[in-house]
Structure formats: structure tokens, C-alpha cells
Image 1 (cartoon, helix red, strand yellow):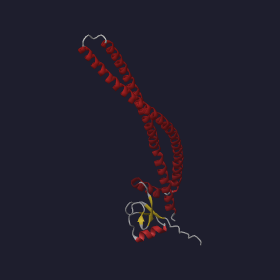
Image 2: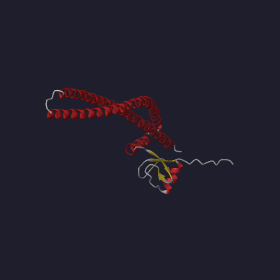
Image 3: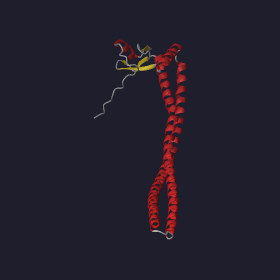
Image 4: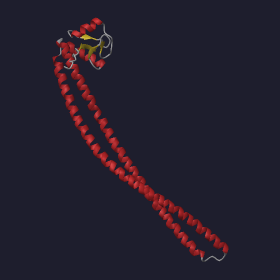
Length: 242
């Protein structure tokens, strides 16, 4: 293989490895934010359950206060019932007592509903507290793993950057300038040619050009995308022995 072409291939591989590590490292904050957002949702569900339980308790206490007032009113009406002088007043007072008793029964039913609601909400709060505890443990583990992955990717990116710089120093100036110019416009400067095509832009290469590229003796550029092309010989498959 042409020694300059070989160095360009190594340079591209180091560059590609560095970019992959950098791209993966740049994703870590987003992934951390997703993990923290999931935990925030768990906390929000618990807060909502607690808020609903508190609201139910307030509603029940309000109803209990109203019930107490109604029972006091009924007691007063019953006391007044003994003081009325005429049948008309007596009948009117009975209607008042009946009306108050209907309201008392309504409040009692409402209080019972709130008690049942509070019981269900208390169970929901306990479930959400358990779920939050599990989520917090999971989040700690995930964030720890992401921190470790971030440090690993930092080290990997640094290793590939060092390798890239070391290889670049061995590439002749004109070839290095060509590599950098193509990479600037195309993102990558070197591509494998396979099946008669440029592996990057998929241009169908002329038969003679592809034949020359397969020898890896010259620095040849794709006519369409200008990437430097090389050929990777296929490793023959070895059939298992019978």
C-alpha cells in the first residue's frame, strides 16, 4: 500500500474515532437531564397525591364543621318546637327541622365519601412514596453510570486526539492539506471503495478507476465528493473442517 495513503487512512480512523467519542460525550448531559426529568415526574406524582389527600382532609373538616352547625341548628329548632303556640307555627317548625335533617344526612354522606376518598389517597401516597424511593435509587445508579461513561469517553477522545496529532505529523504537508480541505467540506476526507462505488457518496466508479483503487498504490479522489478512496481486501471465509 502507498505509505502516504496508509497514513491518511490511519488519520481518518483516528479522526472518526475521536468524533464518535466526542459526539457520545456531548450526549451525556442530555441523557442525564432525561434521567432527572423521569425522577421529577415521580416526585410530581407524589406531590399531586399528597395535595389531593390534603384537599380531601380540608374538605372533610369543612363538612364536619357544617354538620356540627346543622346539628346545633336542629337542636335549637327542637327546643323552639316546644314553645310554639299554634298548629301553623308547629307545622312550620317541623318543616324547618326536616329540612335541616336532610342537610345533615347530605353532609354525613359527603363526609363518608371524603373518608373513603382519603383512605384511597392515603394508599396512593404510600404507593407513590415507595415508587419514588425506587426511582431515587435507580436515578443515583444511572447518574453514576453516566458520570463513569463520561469520564471514559473523555479519556477515549483524548487518546484518539493524541493519536490523530501523532499520525498527522507523519503525513506530508501537501497530503495533509488535501485531507484537511476535503474534511472541512465533507466531514470526512477518506472513504472505502467497495462494490465499484465510493463508500461515502455511492458514486458508481469507472471500472478502470476502481481497478486502480484496489491496488492502493496511489492517492485517488472520488470524482463526485473528492474523498480519498482506498480498498479494503475482503478476508476469505474459512469453511469449517468436516
